[in-house]
Image 1: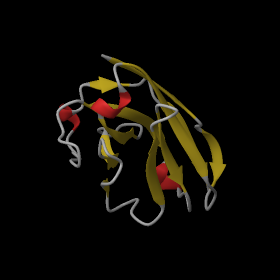
Image 2: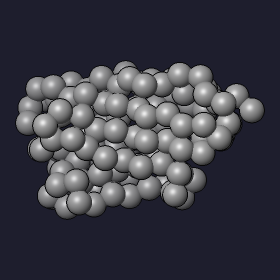
Image 3: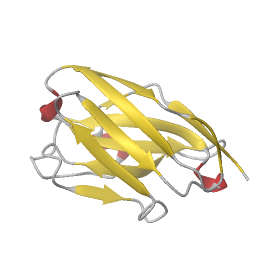
Length: 127
């Protein structure tokens, strides 16, 4: 198993930036493809970004492409979500998740393929 703890959320003005972090502990970090998801009030949880086990492949939701960047640091067992040009519609609870089933270069956008989840960090964007 792996334990995930998100941090870095907060209140930010529209157009600003935030960097979310997700620290992983437990089983070897390289064993997991990682993803970020978000859930806005009254809405379903949705995919934001994913990164492969190797770190060489990434994938983004259309709504964040060009604004958000996912990365991972093997030495720190941490995955990041760099958020730039944040907009009010980005307001949500952000969750990182670990997928143990991907091949080395694979990513997934599907919630049910992520077996482990953090508790989330809240991002609120003021206009």
